[in-house]
Image (spheres, rainbow, N blue to C red):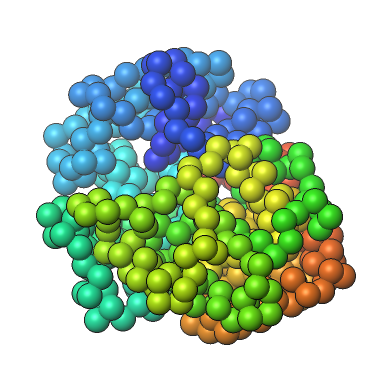
Length: 418
């Protein structure tokens, strides 16, 4: 079977081949490709991703043929003049199934516009047309206005502008979902939203295979930093870092030595022209709540570094205003790190409250504080959550099972088109 994948990012081996600096993080899509090829020797896989080229460039690396597509599809999706390049790729490779990974960016729509929706399946990652509603993360517009910086104004990059941009992307997403007949999802949340937009959609359930390091290690209470909290994303309001900050003073009343570790660059402490409005808001909140000595930004973490940060943490928190199925929760559960997560989107499909983690209502930071303190104060609970979530996550993210199910989805779609 010949498969054409359309992805948002280049694979690591492409960066190596072109002598380019690789990104620190490697996404789960790369892991899924490796697992699929390992289980299916008869598959021919081509991956179309985007690079700063004017024409299509081809690279054969191992068993994968890479099509490097012009960046115009991302920068200017309105431009139809390059649609012939998608058509040329399709005619040359003649895929049995085209798998578009993610609907979040307009370039996903450009293939369907150029080549049609026949033999196309769309994987749902996030849904920007829905996520846009929650973009401010319950921060009032008054507080957002007060935090706007000169950097935001010069770059036309306030939180208001970011939300408008997401809304524009959402229009392309809804057009794409309306045209495609087959979808791959993994939660009741994404299934319901696909049905609401396209009632005749063929929905195929398939879980994700995550990054390999997280299958190889196990968390233990004895080796973690007690009373430490890890949050893996905090760079914009949807991720809810501000809600964790509001909960932290309550936690500190009971556990004064608590520390929070945040993955990513410490852009909240940028000065002058470099600080964003959200960074300014976070800085003010940290000062207001007297939390300066309690927050550590780790910088960008590689896969192995992220894994180690998880293992050293007493609790992992997913504080988002909306999620589909956050991979960070899956990675924490694979390792057995006790999880606390907001009850939003599809997260409840990953966590059974009280068994494989603790859930709380996003707005109620008091409940978040209580959940953290329960795990901090109860070693038996922490260890029980750890045992249960490892079992659940290893079944959900089983590499072989997921590769086989994905291949079965492709067979069904290819057969339906004959």
